[in-house]
Image (cartoon, rainbow, N blue to C red):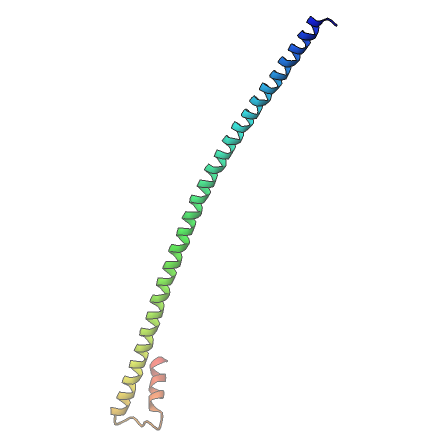
Amino acid sequence: MSTGLLIALIIVAIVVIALVVVSAGKAKAQRDETHRVEASEHRDQARVESARADHREAEVQERTARARREQAVAEEQAVLAEQGRRQAEERHAEADRLDPDVDEDAGDREDRDAGRTG
């Protein structure tokens, strides 16, 4: 082989290696860009899902607060009903005490109460 041919082969080899390196770099840059776009899409989807989750959580908290308010109202009404029941019983007892026709030992009140509800 002549020296000129050997130099030409070395130059061609260097050019081929340079092209492979440049091509590999461009391919990596393209893959990196594709991954960046994909990662951005994932982040966008994650933001949307997070916003939906926040909205659902707010709805749950609102329902929970509403249920607590309704429970408090129900408890208050139960207390008022019990107070009303006690007042009615006290008034019945006072009426029975005052009524000369009521024989407390004979159970007249129970008979009258049964007639009222029936």
